[in-house]
Amino acid sequence: MKIVMTDQALNWFYDEMEVEAGDSIRFYARYGGANPFHEGFSLGMSKDDPLNPSTVLQHNGVTFFIEEDDVWLFNGHDLIVDFDKERDELRYEYR
Image (cartoon, rainbow, N blue to C red; front, side, top):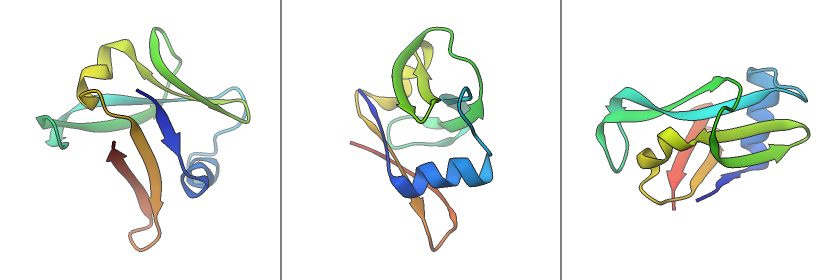
């Protein structure tokens, strides 16, 4: 499993969340909503420090990660993070 992020998505993090070198962004299982694999759970995201990361992507000193405890949400798929220009928001895919 890995995290793949488009340049447009990376720009969103720098512009909207004002991330900078040394920051960490966690993708996690959030109660509520839905994803393709688990009804009642959706993907959450927050600035947080890694404790026991399973998957890590580094970009210009920024760490994007998924904790070992949240791997089940992805059902063995990679997380693809992209930006949807029409909706002006991030879009997540699982491959």
